Image (cartoon, rainbow, N blue to C red; front, side, top):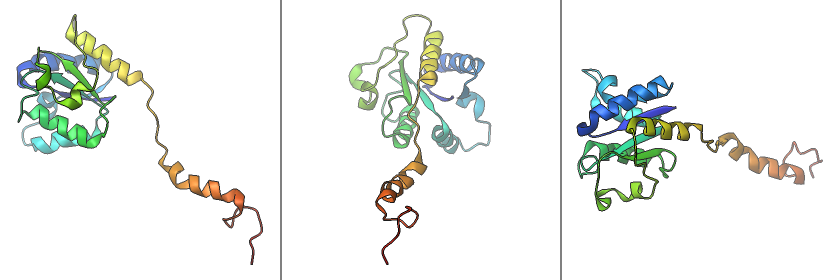
Length: 165
């Protein structure tokens, strides 16, 4: 699973430990401090990685939910990608944050609140999301369903019934 870690600078060490743990568990992790090299277009790289990720781990702290924070910008990109963030955003309370400061789109989700070792609990939560079955879309089916529905009533030339001339 491709995982993007969204965090404020104040908890970088925790995010770095999580990235190392998730990589050891065979997840593909984007962690800006390791994956963006000097000369990269920072904003473009962040947006690109958010577009290709399967799950965003969002660290909730007073700094990450503050208006104008970069984490809020990352949250906006995720919201524009997925109309529903359920199963796509894993919000984790890593520092006590007033509930009214947390964006409503996050408050609607189950917020993980580690009681023990946070990296172990967050990694377990990511593993739970990774093993949860997702509904698979079959875009090819949408185009063929009307055709298949019309075939038995003789509307289409390949239906097997003679066409009126």
